[in-house]
Image 1 (cartoon, rainbow, N blue to C red):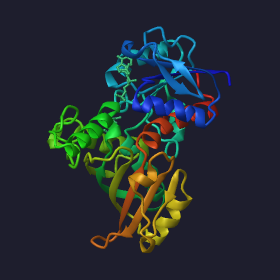
Image 2 (cartoon, rainbow, N blue to C red; image 1 turned 180 degrees about the horizontal axis):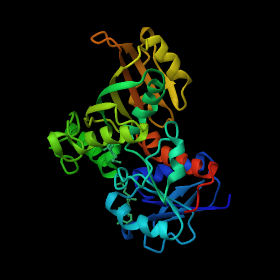
Image 3 (cartoon, rainbow, N blue to C red; image 1 turned 60 degrees about the vertical axis):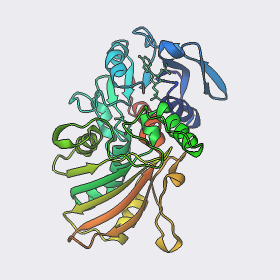
Length: 338
Ligand code: A2P
Ligand code: 11C
């Protein structure tokens, strides 16, 4: 490998998984740089059997870097990505900062790989809940044309980052020791609870997470005619987002046909055998690459309806793996330098 790669936010939940994914997929990098805030400069993160020393991210960090994988929050991306692009580096950004910018492709390699071809320096990695849903929707849309999607999510705390993983652990320990649970990260206790609020409330009393799922789905699928509505819920699970997805198609797709279509589609494992109690769960998907789909059945309340239960590791396919797959696409399609 000849490439120089930087991971911005290398100490975070997603940044660490990005390093692991680069290593596991034998990404052709000559050098990998680990960047984070001044708080963690000088500490180390594991990479390729050894360690990388974390450097403070500055405006100059991207000189000589070919590809930067960003997962350091929206405001950090807004501030530093333009400097990276000015240095000739392509940024693959995991925050929501650039996703809806018409100049920025929003890419899931199984769905719209060709969109990397028009990047101008920044490519956005979609929200984790959106990624796993569109991987399953695309092959069904190609066959039956999806008219409407109704999704409810059950999202793991790792989606919020390292501090939320620690908060769930701490609250469980406190409650088992008859102490009061400390509530810092979420508006309410997350241990032994479900919170029907992810991110802030916005127009029409939808949360920002719900708005992201709606808008990002249309952009990635390249089809604004698909109507999407969502309710997003945080559950006390560490890794793995689950989604109940109901779709209505123009053309009838039977459950049997859907099973065949999905089992032939890239990035999907159909995990669906009710008689053996086999269906996707966070404990099945955690640490794994594929999007798992099960509970596939016809919705008898409408003419052309299907139910799907979709589970994936939100840190892997939902974030780090999708970003590394985009980097691989850049190499394949010869789109690395700006
Ligand atoms: P740091 O560990 O130095 O705070 P998570 O999503 O798990 O909370 O991780 C967020 C990541 O983003 C961490 O690696 C964090 O680094 C990094 N980060 C946050 N703010 C900045 C910043 N201003 N500059 C660089 N990296 C940042
Ligand atoms: C969550 N989906 O699970 C969010 C995390 O837009 O990238 C990712 C937020 C984003 O909390």
